[in-house]
Length: 267
Length: 220
Image (cartoon, rainbow over all chains, first blue to last red):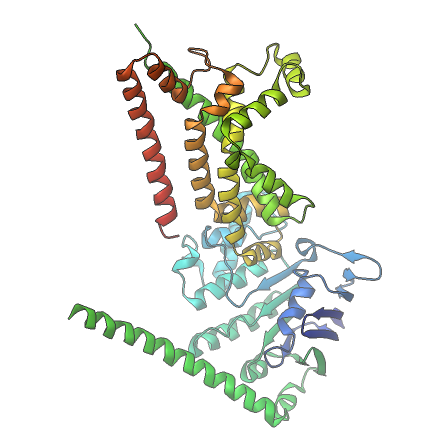
């Protein structure tokens, strides 16, 4: 049984997306190299951008249908969204960020109680009064996850939520994502270009390349599919990992340089 | 015995009300220009900027024509409030509001344009309707620019001379605001009074400038 059915076409200046796939209950990884159209697909499903043509159906509801002129605004789509850089509202507390997203609770008090329970669930309850700017990357994504769940969504969309995190933190958060998807019984579409991440998380896998669906793998076949991926892709994944290392080294070097420069100035 | 405080209190009342009025119109207009695709919003911005480039007396003349007793606005005002709008302190409020509108609108528009639209997108995924996103996300994130714009508008309203004089006249105790009182004092050869009023007005203006500078320099 599929929870989400997507059939979308969208043209950008130098890119054309034309995808058709279904997402079953559970966690589906939208996998592919950078520039394959993964994030664009999520934005179109969430209604953050308007597709040129196609249909999106979620649990029997039509969210978008260009032929019938249906285009529900994002807030009516009941999708939770976790952005790569969290995008917590910087002027509100962690608790407010989650409480503002709570649906189906009338009083302010019950909204805050629900937000509190969600923060507890993602292991971030002690951060409730904090401002987002004081949080680490991992903490931000925990809060973003709680916020995405606060609307009791019919679908969870996660756009490379862990790709900016260090390895140990990323491992813990992968487990957390799996746990909440199971305990909330919410279908999830998780975007990543990281093969390990895809292998660990995916119940099903949709492989995207250059704006097209290359392959859809159902439950059970994911590991095998990832293993037989082309040499070029393996190289690309390795290159991504290398880039992350270099970026980190560069950042460290930058810090070291500025210390040296400051010393030089002092002398 | 002359009541020294009268022009100052009148000026403060007129410019605070003018700032409130220009704040509602200016921030609302700034949001429309920055965040909607309303046709004609660029024209709106240009028209709202005119008070900066028009000579104050010319602006005042147009306002006098637009708000006068025989104009549509003037007639409606008079039938509702029982007195004309021109040559009253309420007329001075309107003149100061129009004169200060561009400072508020342009500063607020720039501040709103700088707010990362992705926060608004995040708010959409949180299920917030557009009016709540404007009030609870966009405007709070642009608040420093908006406050700076309101401070500039207040300073401009406080100092308005030409437009106020044309629309509201120079009626002691009713429409004689600080800048007009200073002119009056100089004309009457009362240098002490002119100096006193000028120093008071300067202190208020410098305080506003200090507030704007702090708002613009303090990190988020």
